[in-house]
Amino acid sequence: YFSLTAPTPSITVTSPNTGSESWEIGSTQNITWSSVNVTDSLKISLYRGGSYLIDIDSYEYNDGSYTWDIPNYHATTGYYYKIRIEDYSDPSIYDDSYYFTIETPASITVTTPSSNGESWDDAVDKTIQWTSTGSISNVKITLYRSSSSSGTYSYLQSIDTSEPNDGSYSWDIPSSLVSSSYYYKIRIEDYTDASIYDDSYYFTIY
Image 1 (cartoon, helix red, strand yellow):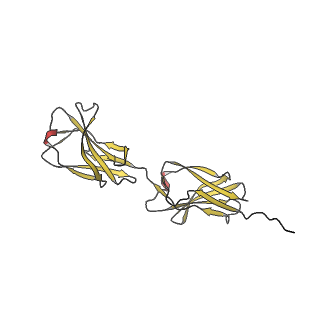
Image 2 (image 1 turned 180 degrees about the vertical axis):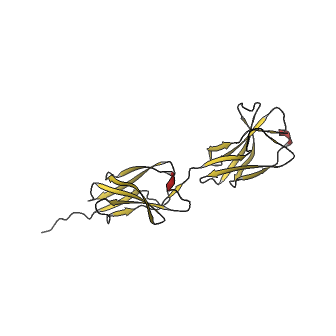
Image 3 (image 1 turned 45 degrees about the vertical axis):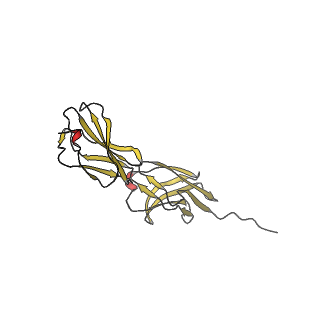
């Protein structure tokens, strides 16, 4: 003879599950899990640096998936996060995800030139400046030109094809750019993703 017993209750988080995920603020991510002999309701919580941070959903139906829109107040640079999913009726039945990071979306903002209509002397090196967020290692710096301050600016030439993203670049302005007929803008873009960029205010060169 033999006896039959119910399987031991368990929860297994299946995403995030690699230990290398990096999720951006504002993105939508799927938290997934599997379970055995667990009630229909679960609790989903976020941990940071090994400590409880906040409930993501305090009462979630146990259907194996939860869509999470990541709000900006969760991200703190230098911390690692985990998702904990537990049985709503028995918190001792739970599983933690692998570690993952939450990052600020990548962005670039050109800060110098700092206003429209600046005049830059080609005889003096000018410092191009910018700020950035997210993981951007290197940037491209290019020059655009238009015959009208409010017109369409077209690519003219490269200033630096791969510059460390340190927020500053000293530009030795070529004398060939001196003109009373053109207006210029500087574009700074992520070296690996051209869709992440910013254009400066327009300026002239004399």
